[in-house]
Image (cartoon, rainbow, N blue to C red; front, side, top):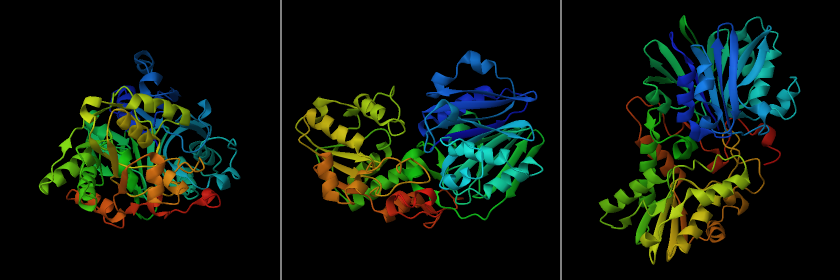
Length: 465
């Protein structure tokens, strides 16, 4: 999972806007970050390992002069965590450089490597760039479309070539890609929160299968492939920032309704109710307010499990040992709020189980008499081939490892009571949050991690799983 951005400014340096956009999408990837600016006749790249403020400095940004550029924050799902895979990826077409930002995960890389000059451990993004570099097409647009025909899986792409941006969303639209506008400036980004920070307006979500070409002369739209929207429901459950609006649904409002649905399906009484911050916050509020509507009162203490915001998301930390280290810093319970109490904790999802297992220990060490956990999404039982890297480590998905046995999951994690929101109610909650112009229906979701259904196939991973 990554965050990508591209922009065409009118007479204004793009570097600062790209920095702000990447910082707004830091939650989508913290492994590395990169920016490419069109400067005169050259493309200039600035990138590095780490989070956005670690990679870019005021002096380095000031050295990037140009009004057109792209950027990416990376959470690696394919290819080594290495300097050569820091985005954006570079290619050459007819002797001229181009660069590529990519959010998604290809499932046919093994097949594609056989027809390119790609290195064995290069990212799938680099494989896409190499396919275009090897193309015999006459012009760049033709080479891009020829390459898109060969790709399988999820792939939102932004290219910069010859003072022009080319942006494409795969025909299933697994992940968000959106167009914004600020005066005469165009911005493409993974999430609408970017437009808010840059003083721009959301124009539209890219249609699945749509190619948009932008330069200083204007914008062109091309529907390259038929649209068959299967939006990743895990975006609404976890990945999207709560203030981002995708396909007419604000993620935070969808999570609020998931919390209300969770209370309807699994009403649990406890002395104290808390969210697992931050991604459980909206669902916890929805749960609490539903119970109040039913005249069932609990103390809602969202402050009882303190989260210092100097620590960002541990789920996207690329190294397991670092995830475990950061878990010690991520949460700090307040014993005076918890001692002797039965506690109900609301979380957005339960995948690896590392975070919740640590939280249970912390709460009980702080004096909680018992801890129940309700999850505002279905049981995560299958690997995700199109988004996060839950296919790379054997037995990493705890429910898969334990064959979906609720009792064993509960006991393994040290939870006194555990339950999940149904798939039906999860989808209903998203639809309940729709705005007037939303295109979403109950048939427009990718639910692979919960159902094992993969619209674009499993490709390279089918034999392993």
